[in-house]
Length: 216
Image (cartoon, rainbow, N blue to C red):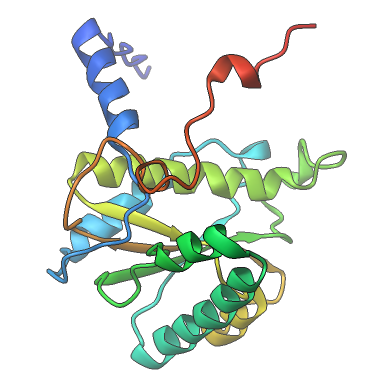
């Protein structure tokens, strides 16, 4: 008979450290080029796979992007998408947008694409009939776990969303029923900040949680 493991007790010290982890998690754009041990990346992926998923379907799929030509194609996709985004802004907002560093693909030693398998048979469809988008949300949960696990190891993660998803799918030659969820730049950060860069640069302040919460 297998013994049931005793659940851990998360004391006040741990609780404070966990809040610090959340506060110090940043979307990193400036990386050192120092290599990350392969074992660390593999551990991050394993830890990401502990995320909750609808019907326990585990739809996340990870692609390590190592080939320089594929990286270049995705970097070019960013440039096109970034120019289109810039064209949507005007005046001072356009100047501010142009000054922001929105990707770290030129420095980050690790680039990882995360997809959701939209046709996975795992989980046998549980919980997806009325909300099929739960597949994508499950993959996002895996990204968040990876992000926090990386911060614990002193590793930074930058989520690049200014991309053409179809270009990424084609470049990485993945199945057409995979949906791009995240393109992650991973490496040791040049610097650490408790305040997000977009707050520091005056793009967008934090919104008070009370303004985002309703009671019914």
